[in-house]
Length: 228
Image 1 (cartoon, rainbow, N blue to C red):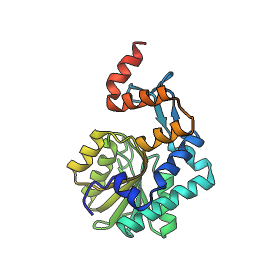
Image 2: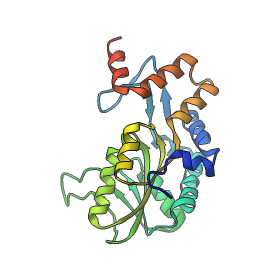
Image 3: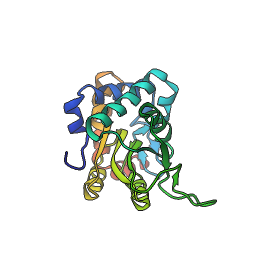
């Protein structure tokens, strides 16, 4: 399988998953869409979408469904690894659930090492040479995800791939992963989400167009929103 495996390949195997995950995220308000009253991201950008996949953990049936999709993807594309790693903090709980299902050790990895104590980036026990599958909750530009991968590689781990719950489908993320020859699969993505949101009347046609405009140029859209 070539590197940088994204949703397109995944859909061929499990076609209903991207839509179903999108429906769940909208249903429980893990994803909120509001072009009229945009959200401020930590970067300072204004955005018509906000995603908080931690909400999934409060819904046992959906939490179990997401865990099973992770398990199915691992079995289909990666095979069993020695260790499951979660990206701090959003990927930790989901990674634990996956590790428990496989009966595997679990570690979690920070994008940046701690500023105190042992200054660890990797928490938990892993040995050099062990194979790792990384669980991420959300991919935006891919920068923090790649920093986690670098920490694991620098330690001496073999990375089999990464799976996320959701990706914004930013071109920069795809280019970052492609450049680093790294294989990523996301259960659902921005395109699937806004299509489902429109079909299920979570948003209007005008909202749909606004969301597409934002996706083309998040910085430009943010500046326009700030000046309104």
